[in-house]
Length: 102
Image (spheres, rainbow, N blue to C red):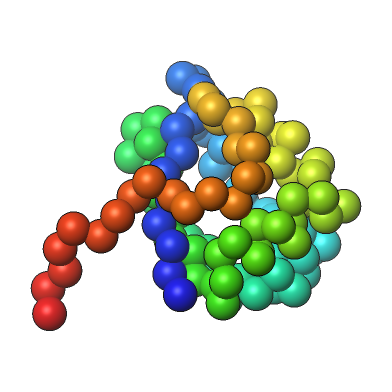
């Protein structure tokens, strides 16, 4: 199942966000895969970030990562860069598919 997310950077954090994402810690990679993530891609347009997450069960993935020792420090680092910190509530994202080319 693919899920689309939208996040927003704090002004001036574009380069730092890309620098931090240039190398994902191996333990975080492992945790994401253990949580059922098959693919996670992020596009940036200005301060806006668009994520396409392919995982078996989005809510279960979020619950698994909420307190995972590899995810907690990563999320703390991301909170420094993002306009709104992720609370890892697992709530459904607000982005809904409106149209697609059949």
